[in-house]
Image (cartoon, rainbow, N blue to C red; front, side):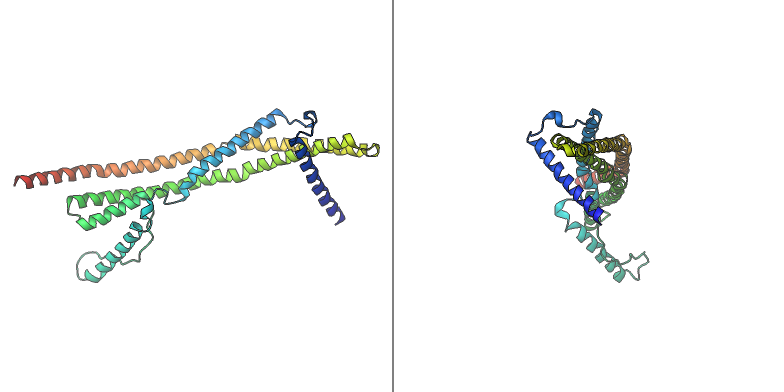
Length: 294
């Protein structure tokens, strides 16, 4: 117990000495020559690690939007179209069950309203589907809106898949790197900083030590030097491990692949209906001309 208390007191006193040493350096009360200089390669690694941490923070600040399903959803629709669409389908299903029992067609099952996906494409799909029901699918515009609704429902579902792929393949690995590997290297750097302050504090103590305590002060300084060397080597190893790890590139590539897959599928979905829309358009134009000629 006494040893534990002594160790606690020592660490506490050491922290105080480090704070005093840092304050003296900050206010110019210590000669530059008395401040231990860390290796240039160590300083260079520190700068690179700071840059890598900044990159992760800047990118994650923007890309974390993929964690929010409604990042492209119109704000004014949050409590309108999505809720109305669910209620509309519930009402339609109930009506069909009550009125089509003796009709020889499939009867849709009555279901309770369910939360609707909040993406722009899903909102477009729901708006088009609602409009198609209002105007009638046999109408040219109703027919076109039906196809438009189906295409954007597919696009919206694809966007949800993209977001999930980005979350797993990019966001989680980058956040883990920031919170673990980079933070571990930064903690090692803090240990180096504290060891350097303690060493320089010991050097000052050796200069002012009484003859009876010179030997003890010298031993403390040598111990501090050894510890600084060991911790500097550890920090260098950890920083190199983070900086040389290709994982951020791998995750960034997964982000791009997810985007390509989504956008390609979106183009395919729209291309699939574009020819039909042109045909519907021409048919509507022909009908319009005929009505004018008659």
